[in-house]
Length: 133
Image 1 (spheres, helix red, strand yellow):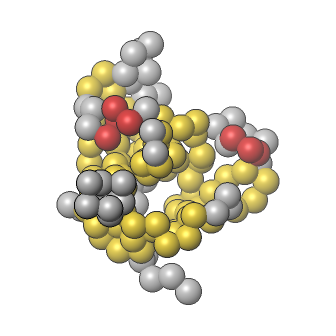
Image 2 (image 1 turned 180 degrees about the vertical axis):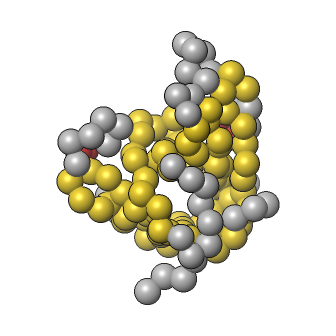
């Protein structure tokens, strides 16, 4: 809580991550951590994208750009801003984004069971930016 009693805005960031090719990391601040998903292309209005849930990341990635330790490539920030959570459940998140590049309602929902690596909990997700049914 801030000194005025209001909850400070939560932040989000999209990082272009060049490592073994390129993917985009979509990150939502939640307390002292960033919930993170890997996307094969950047989020765009009206597009539904497969998303792979990654382990939570450190808050430092909200502002970090550059090389990643352990020869894991490099990241560059392509979008950032704040968000307001609308629905925050284990299998579905709906948030309103207010960013420099991304604005609007974003839905992340668990899709189907998967045994693939990078899918904690054994599930893949879908990300959609735009109109919500």
